[in-house]
Length: 218
Image (tube, rainbow, N blue to C red):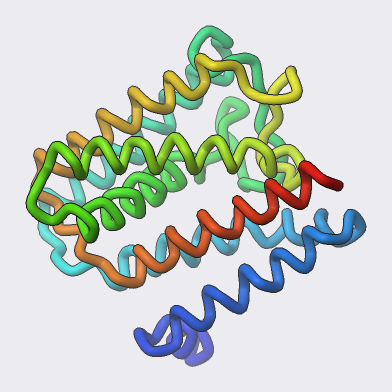
């Protein structure tokens, strides 16, 4: 526990995130070690959630309700999507995201929440005075993040589409869900001034951009 407290300390967290994703890039460089990285994804998601909750600036009942609603809603949307190809396209989840219910990882709602929160905290930092710009930019960040993630997801045993790359409707659906999520955060007046979540989101964005380039070339 003391080790976990140390790496989650405010002064240490940024360095910890950089070290982990630097090691991740090195693992991705070699096909033989990519599988090893896939086993780290679920624990890292858990750690990311802890970071978000640990450094979130303002907790109240409304925040808990909105966070829980986002996680549950997106989980059930994904459960629907996995069995109805018209929503995202035809795809299936692999083992890296952990236990599943009806072929849908329990963690997928948390992933949507973390991505939406991270995108919002970036947009809020850049556009503190305009809710319209925050929502627009956050949606763009989320869809862009998914576009990068889709390259790495099959290689990391997260999920896999029947075709080589997801169809256009996947990104259209992502955009609509992202819009609803961002409106919920803004309408609920969720304070996402969270420097550590911002650093984590940027680090993940850079990581998946680099790994997408590596996997595309190799």
